[in-house]
Length: 280
Image (cartoon, rainbow, N blue to C red; front, side, top):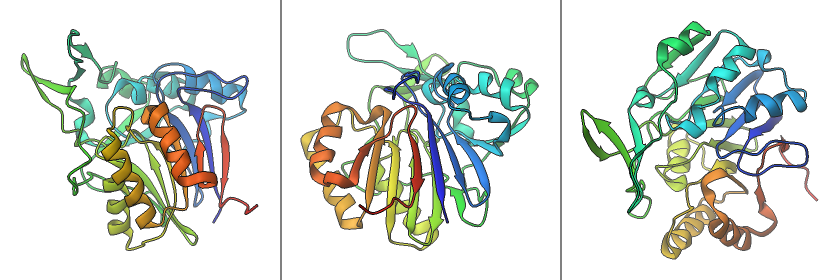
């Protein structure tokens, strides 16, 4: 199987592409074209146009979670792509907020109403369970928290009534591609932990080898201890390639680059990947 991944939105960009805080990737595998997340606003549509990507070819849209930087481009995408099934966890419609110490609360959820998106052709398939998109492609569904060092950031909240409560990000999910050369896991933010996510992918598929993990890892605020434990776990799992994006952060990216050497890469706006990689 050959997999093509085109990154349409990310914090930094290759030449001529637009950068924006957020993430969006077009994943082509097993005869299926999946748009995984939509960026924060216009970057995914803009970069698709300059990269020659026709969004009308997309079969389905998968949303990794309900934060604005992964869903804010959905309206623009739908105006180009037309009617599409949108697969996500029901928690994406929670009233999500962020509140950093000493700062006022800030809305961080989907910046649209559901009815407006449905009027543009979105058909929402909301479930907590994994969704099989083809014989080899599926979503993770809810990701269990199984270790003691991957935690959801305490500055992320959900509003119930007038009260802010800690958001456990139950809606956080990833995309799994089961290939003959190993699992390829596409990450949105990995709020519930990259290690937890990959172990869940292994459990769902019954496959151990992780060929590549690509996307956001939300290690931007991670302690040195968490970085060390994360790197050790990824090595123990035998992850062949690690391509980070978005919320990984500079310090974590530099640390992982040192730990994984030529098996590490930055995945930015404008990046086109074909897997499996050709061995040097």
